[in-house]
Image (cartoon, rainbow, N blue to C red):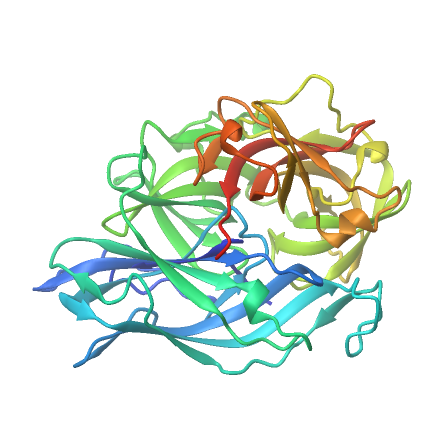
Amino acid sequence: MRSTRMMQAGLFVFLLLLASCGGGTTTSITPPAQVGSAPMSLTMRDTPPAGVTILSFEIDVTAASMVSSSSSVPLITGEPIRVEVEHLQVEKAFLSTAPVAAGTYDSIAVSFANPEMTIFNYSGAAIGSCANGATCELHPTLSPASVSYSGAPFPLTITANQPAGLLLDFNLNDSIQADLSVTPAISFTQLTTAPGGEDGEMEEIDDITGQITVVDTANNQITVQDSSSGQTFTAKVDSSTEIEDFERVGLANSFSSFQVGQIVEVDLMLMSDGTFTAKEVELKQPEGVNENQLDGQVVAIDSSTEFKMVLHDEALDDDGVEIGNILTVTLQEGATFQIDSDGIALPTTVTFLSAADLLVGQNLQIRIPSGSSGTAVTTDQLTLERSQITGKVTSPGGIIFTVGSLPAYFTNASPTITQIDVQTSSGTQFEDVTDAAGLNVGDTVSVRGLLFKTSANPLLAADSIYKRHPED
């Protein structure tokens, strides 16, 4: 099953009048000019849920339309867009860009289908077929399937030739009911050019992993097909693009090394005209190598050689597993451990060298042999990647602060984890707060970074911190 990346705090619907995300479909990049219209882009993110811990939540976005008193303008066409919401606490997911006629729009209508989720039930009692203390994969009911939203920033006026963007926030707290059925609760934020960003940048879309399908040397562009959604992204590569890890296979870190068939991870900047510029391109797997790479979150440590993780992404869609599956991972003897620091400043006191450094809550990429299938896998290489965690500030500070009220997989771990120290640096990006000194006890924050096991509280070296508001 395919799933489009979705912001853990919401879906970013860039209404730039271009059809975009769709399972197995192609994302248009340059819409045809239309008289009296403007490009509109749509993205999405998610507000984390209370109660049961949601480890994975996928849903199809089947349609979205801007509605005025005289017309309805579709923003999403083609096949449904499959979105994994739970890993969007800090990130955003791109949905579409489409042309919208100038005028005033009173509301937006969005339709959903086929929710699936993986939960950890710590309610104290069974919920349906999910026993207390169990991790379960569920197919909840959805009602209603379509939602009309007319709150702020609506009524929304679109001016000809002035690009606009909307960020759709899918609030899991309010959407998931006591019986675990789903009643979509959404809201929208109008997007403008990102403050302090590149000229014309609307948003950043991070961690798109997939195969290069086109190398356009004439225009210095590459096209990457997202392995999760099947959606394709064509992005400009310029002098500011960071190109990394090609030297591992004897290639230069330059545009000349791009080849069709390589698996890469790209961070994109969504520009106000609906096009993409590559902020970073990192080689994950050379062309012709068939070993798969699975990305997921550790939810249990079973022994010194085995752990469980919930699957969030895979490089190759051919291993008989689906997003949200619970994988049992066995370490091969001599398995190697490495860190994808991606520019994050790491304290000298942290390590990730062996199974002794594994911790619930860590996000890992594991390499498995070609031909493997099913949810019981063996790995010979583990890479520590960025985790996303939401909690409440229990001890503020200038560089390091502490977060509690953690998800249940921490508080039910052995030994119990009740707090995580978050270390910031000059490279940490903040949203809705200037810096860590602006955080107070009780503030809810979503943090993203590398999570390490230490002798005291676990430590997260943060690259992004988002201060949430009561309405989130």
